[in-house]
Image (cartoon, rainbow, N blue to C red; front, side, top):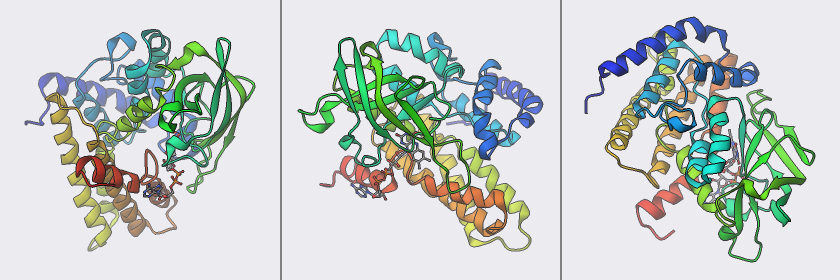
Length: 362
Ligand SMILES: Cc1cc2nc3c(=O)[nH]c(=O)nc-3n(C[C@H](O)[C@H](O)[C@H](O)COP(=O)(O)OP(=O)(O)OC[C@H]3O[C@@H](n4cnc5c(N)ncnc54)[C@H](O)[C@@H]3O)c2cc1C
């Protein structure tokens, strides 16, 4: 496959580069300042025509091939701009399992950034073992009443809506008793508590307590008991290559680290350079498969595992070059630790690969 830009891709890249030259510098790329202005960045990207590139036109996307997302990621990294807000997994979850009415109501605002979202899956006792979740949604006339406790909920401090998993039937096998809802975060009975991360960020993360919060029955995504199917779609997309578009960002960071080194580079940096290039080629291969119409199932776990290795190799390189006294590089190292946990831990990816790709009896 020829990865050079086709003429229309080159034109898109040039237009994007011009826009970024004027705009990128206005937006912070890290820390609480980044999170505080992430929504504004999302809306600016969208308004300029550079967000939702591969999503359906009907909901405000551009319906372009996924290679445009890669061009976007490359140019954002090159310009030192903030990353593309990642919400493809929610768009795909609602797009695949939501009714036409739910899609029409919610996808446009999600894509253009006027409505912010969070994902309420994990609980204090239900992370890897998500099917053991204990939050309940009990039918009461034309609504459900929600009680429970979600944790590690990214963007919950700014979210207008939450894609929530809750148990609606305790009397069936546990995977089958879970349903999914679009629930408003702005109501009595929803309390958001911030969590401070090890890198000092306080804005990204929270826990959410539901104490008799309500959600209209029509906001259920799919049928009662369909929550597990939706969850598998969502986590599958969290792990796939278009969401792994950080390959370009890693490459840039490795080059920046190399420029700071006098003399022979530390081994960690050399290893990060090799791994980053490996991920870049891997993402390209996956994209070319996508363009050929190949869809991925459990292979997403391989992508996620590879990306975690690269992210953490780059984190180690940042630490080796900057040491703990360089706050920015140290924060890069600290955040890389989260990569083997978010979206499903590395151990869980290995279990999936063992059972579903290698056919081992796990
Ligand atoms: C930055 C970040 C953002 C996140 N954002 C969200 C979000 O927006 N919404 C949301 O719902 N969740 C979110 N999460 C939560 C994330 O999905 C969970 O942390 C993750 O699934 C692991 O669950 P846990 O933390 O409960 O760990 P546990 O499941 O308690 O795991 C603890 C350890 O045991 C290991 N382990 C557990 N079970 C097995 C097994 N069967 N085989 C082998 N090893 C096992 C794990 O690999 C891990 O090392 C986020 C997490 C992070 C770090």
